[in-house]
Image 1 (spheres, helix red, strand yellow):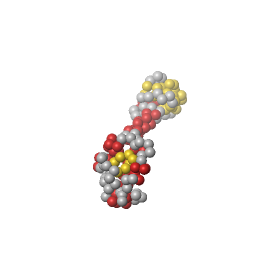
Image 2: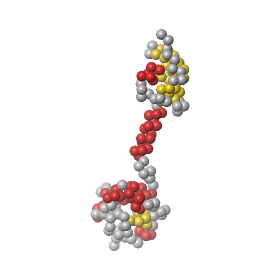
Image 3: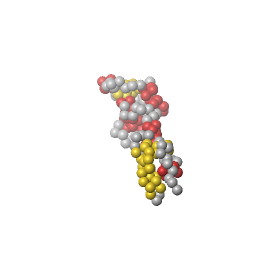
Image 4: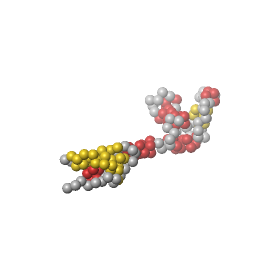
Amino acid sequence: MKALDITGQRFGRLVAIKPLESTKQGIKWAFKCDCGKDYVKFAKAVKINADKKSCGCLQKEIYSNRCKTLNRTHGMTYTPEWNSWVNMKDRCSNPNAPKYHHYGGRGITIFNEWLKFENFFKDMGNRPKGTTLDRINVNGNYEPGNCRWATHLEQRHNRRV
């Protein structure tokens, strides 16, 4: 019985180019993937294995897109605004933070909506160069109306007595 010629047939992203060798298991074929890579596989395995749609590039692409979606909700990780937000949360809620006793230890809390970075950024906006997060009333909480971006000089004049 003569082997079936699949030259030019497409299997997902794989296109059969030519038969390479005949073995007891069947005929090995050279495939070309849409990404440009050459791929060698038994034709029978490619036909039967319906999830084999590429040389492996499709799975990598799907995984990469999934990671981008899961890990980048706002795209501002490690920006100055994000760093200020992380440090604010740490000072108020982490008893192991070096300055916790000046903040969370004194009962300073964070506006509930600001526990999500996007809400904090919406209210505070971009952090101007040379400024950091400051509470206008040093005994008040981190909340809209009591926070601003202030220079170090402005913060030195705004201290507890």
